Each structure stands twice: as structure tokens, then as C-alpha cells.
Length: 634
Image (cartoon, rainbow, N blue to C red; front, side):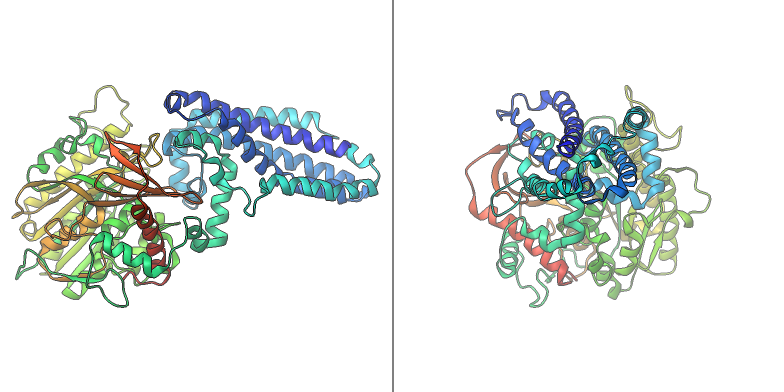
């Protein structure tokens, strides 16, 4: 029984670490859910289930070694298991510590995002060191203290287990293996338990507290890497691709499509021109509506956008595709919604022959470029843009003597200066051009040059508000400089955000935090405010309408000047999808039934089920996955 006691002891060690972490989150976020009406105490019961599943997996190796290893290997096994548990418990301590700042940033437990960007160590570790010095100090102090006492008092921790006769140890293997199997499966139903079983309530933060961080990370990696999109889609429900395409077409009001390429149709311009306009799409990193007075945000942070909003087409109720830059870029440049799993910028089947605004305009003689102040290898942007119709990627290495370089690259001012130079060259050569610019300043650790803006009162210099105020300054400077050039009169300018700065809230999908600003400018554009719901694909379709060409494309949206335009948006929040039509929203999550809500006062209010809307949100998930896998979005 010595082996059983030993394993149970380490089970308790791990459960204790998880419990302390969960208790800390429960206390810290208690005010956010205390009046939610859910039984939040159950988080500890359901949480224990998640923790037991995790510890059971981590005990597999110790069970095998302690029951099946011959006595001659006792010293080797003792040494190995000491360091095995040292590493495992240290990782658990680190992950539980890291959970607090991760939730503060993303409003969810660590998931695939926790490891996805480790392939970019320069940017990621620079940001972590700059922003989380105290958190790192606390975590590594705890790990160091634990390691000291663990190594001091466990020198022969596992040697005594080998005093049990070998045959008795072997006999223990099967019952212990069965116990671990039950713990890992945590269900006697046909389907084993998984991360969705932690989502027992209607309060999202309670569900997040119930989860186990390391299980959440591991499960996300497992599903993404091993099973791919087929497994992901199966978690949402079943629907034939034919029904899915039909439903999405009907919901988006897209008709007369190409027989072999769903959504591809001819759209005739409402602004026919003999000399079509150039197109510049200036995408802003993490610019949320709450900072822009023109769309209902705080005063004083974006004076230039507020000024420009009176001179062009202002989208007052615009929503992003998702919460990451690659989702916003694909929505703004390719006009599609967020596919399940990794974004299209990072997926194999979309590296070539995937529709973009560059591939669309290339047959009309447009030169195309992606201009970015950082290193374009980040998020695989360079490969995706060059593989899908863009002639040139101009990133940090091609900026000569930039005035300021921060953690994420050359400043937004330098970006504007470089873009202005390129556009003047194209115009001087008589070339039409389409260009996508992507800013960097509004990204932690919020580097920007001194002396450019009057800092926002009451917040640190390196803060979101000051970074946004600087980005706004750079936007104003770029547009003002462009107006002095000859190309301005022949160019349509789009300014919009990739996503909000931080998407958080107690709702299953915090819809208001998908709200972003958008603006289209041009010399002969009549100023107006568009009040209805729009998406990034809608903005792209509107901009293409304004350049004055009849175009055939698969963009999943319509120009605001078209009578086909629908009051609709699709938002992806981690693994959840929300389909909004007017003020009714259907939300679908993995392994859960879809739910219908009303959107009132910037919050979700439960209402009676809308079966058709709930089927339609599943249809979008199925259709987007099908389009990607069959390479039909082109």
C-alpha cells in the first residue's frame, strides 16, 4: 500500500495547487458574478473533476514506473521520479500564477494562445518581461522555494516503494491503471468528459474559474494538432455542407453565385468611374470603439479620428471578426469571417489562391503592397500576403533610418511616411495601387516616441490610452500629408481596427467589446454616418464599391449602398461563435446546445430559443470550414 499512499500524496499536492489557484480567482473575480444568479459554489465541485482528469494524466508515468520496474532500477526510478515531479509541480505552480495575468488580458483561462506565439520569442518575451516583471518574480520565487524544500526532503521518496515485493507491485498495476482511466475519462457515459463539462453555468467567468489551466492548454493543443478542423467542427454539431451554404447565402442575402464557388458573384458598382480609384486600407492594431468619441467612446483620446469622422463615411456600429489580428486582417483584406481553429493567415490551405483584395484588383493593373512597421514574419503575414496576390511586402528591414523603433517595430509615423513615399512613386509611374497598412504602436508594451502627443491625464505614459492617442496622431498626420499629394484625389482611404484592445465581460460572448471604429475617406466622398450593423467584410465591399469598378468576388458582406446589405454580424470569441441579426443573437459553443439572446443595453439577455437562428450560426461554422478545406474561397 506504500505505492498507493505515495501516489495519493502527489495527487493531493497537485489538487492543492489547483485549488489554491481556483480559490484565488474565485475571490478576485467574485464581485463580477456574485449577483449573476448562478450557483457559483459548484465551481469547486466541477473544478475538482477537471483537476482530477489532469492529475490522472500526470500520474500515468509514475504508476508505470513504480509498479512495473524491477528492483535493480530502484535508484534510477527514484532519481527520475524526483525530477519528474519537481518539473511537473514547478510547471503547475507557474501555470497557476500565469493564469491571473492571462485572464486579466484575455478574460479566459490559458488556452492555445498561451503557446501559439512561442514561435516568435523576440516579440513575445520582450512583451512579457516589459509588462509582467512582478508576476514573473512572484512565480519564480515560489518555484525556487518549492524546489529547495522538495529536493531537500525527497531524497529517498520513492526508494521505499521498491520494498514491496515485485509481484505485488505488478499486481497493483491493473487496479491503479483502472483508477487512472476512470479519472481521465471522468464519465461513465459513451463520451468522456472534456473542457466543455466545466461550462455548467450561464456566467462565463464562473465557467472559466471552473476550468483547469493546464488541461485547457493541453486539450486545445491536442484538438488543434491531432484532429484538425474535422474534430473541431464535430464539436459544434452536424449539418450537411449543402444546407450550410444555402443557409449562409440566405442569411447574407447573396444570390446568383458561381456554381463551383459559393458566395462568388458579380457586384456592380454604384459609383461607375472611367478612372477607377486607388485603394488604401489602414488597419489599426487594437483600436476599440470605447476610445473614439465619434462612435460613442471617451472624449479627448482620438481628436484626429473625431475630426476625420466628419469628413467621410463613419461606421458607427461596426464589429470585428474576432479578437486576434489575423482574424481582423482576413476580414478586412479578404472579406471573410473567422474560420474555426487557426486563422487563415497561418493555415496551410490558404497560403496560395485564397481571395484577397490584391488578387481581385491585379487583373485591372493594380500594384499591391502590404506595409508594416514590424517584422512581417510574425503571424505568418509575409507568406500569406505574398502567396495571395500581393506584389510586395514592405516591413521593418526596408524602412531606412526610421525615427523611432519600439518592441514591435518602426513607429506609426514612420509607417505613414514610408507609405506616402510608395504611393507617390506609384502615382508618378502612372500605376494604379492597392495597399494594406498595419500599425504597431497600440500593442503592449506600448512603445511610442516622446513629444508627439499631450499625454492622457491620470494614466501611465506606457498605457493603452496614450498608445491609442499616439496612433490617432499618426493617422491624422498620414491623411494630412496624403492630402498634399497628387494621388490623394484618386484614392479611397479606409481606416478601421483589426479588433478591440481587450475583449472581456461576463457575457458568454461580450458583444460590445467587438465594437470597433471604421471610416472611409476620399476627395469626393459625401460625409455620412452609417448607423446600422456592419462587419469588416462590409467595409471592404463598400470601399470596393467606391473605387468604381464592377467586380466579381466572394466577400461575405455587402456595400452599404446596396439594397442587399443585411443588419448582421458574426463574431468569434475563442471557441464560441455569435451570430447577430438585428438585436437577436444565437451563440454556439463546442459540445453545447446553441442559445438565443437579446442584445439590450450592451449585454446579452436570455430569451426563447430561435431554432432557425441557432441553425444558421452552425451553418456559418460548417460553411466556413468547408470553404477552407475545399479551397473554394477564391
